[in-house]
Length: 418
Image 1 (tube, one colour):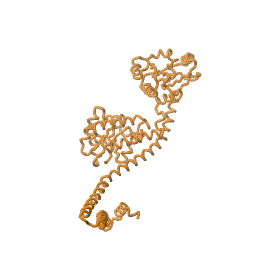
Image 2 (cartoon, one colour):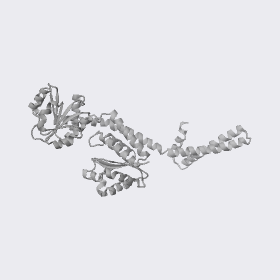
Image 3 (cartoon, rainbow, N blue to C red):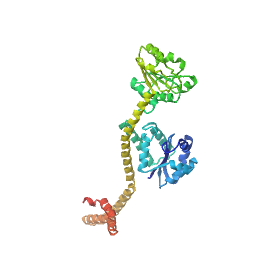
């Protein structure tokens, strides 16, 4: 087997070029079938996300140029335009690259977990199209186990590195469990949508979405079974909220000190967490002066994110060491497979000699030959036949002045241990 990876990603190519060589769901099966028709390809997996497009192939011969041409032709992208943005990894470098990708070490956001699911989906799609041969099957299964090991032995995915996720993590730390908490989300843009996804993942059961227009809020709320209110109704619902997370484009604060003070009285001073992700602020800064109100601004969250990014970089050092160890181990296993055919042939040859000589000895014994004499003769002939080829190899290496070859044969025959 010969492993080869060809691809582009967010580090090497612009968004425009990545879009041109992406394999959408409508193109993927066709591409895999087209690849299977290439005589040099034994198996392939295509990984295509918004940040990368990669071909993982088990090839029969050195064929990186052919694969590059195939990628260019399939997407009708000029070869000279594509080439500068491509990277190529072979054998152990290919193994290591897949493991790094699966572990989130090659992602735009270091350590992000979504990429592992995308790699698994790419593998499943290729299996469905019968393009995963035994070599790729072993490689991807190994990559999945390495990703699990990295997640278990390091904390690379345990630190929030987006403001939205940091807001949810902060809420979870303060309330311990979000299953009983009521969360008021103010706004219905992309940031709030991301917050809602994280909250849902943390088991939050009740969300209220407040927005200037109900229509936009409804589009978001229906995905999380959330209630919908307008911005003007916030004072009526604020007392129900244990957590308030706000991100709107309002030029003026939406939630004032007096509004929060009234809500806290209605809550009998049960604590309230307010996370203001908006710029300009949605929550008056004076709210932080109130007892039982805990206000965090986007700057507070950004400092958490910056600290966590540095922590992920530290964890990544250990993760890289795991990947290096596992990729070297897998490469050793691959190399050992190259000897399988030779070992099988050698054993078959020796067994053929044994059966031939044994058959003759048994015939001679059945004809009345002396058993002891026949045993001695069998052992001598068997020894001579088995050592004949290695002996000739030793002689030729010595005669041709090849000490390195002679040393390898001696080691193979165990002569250095005598």
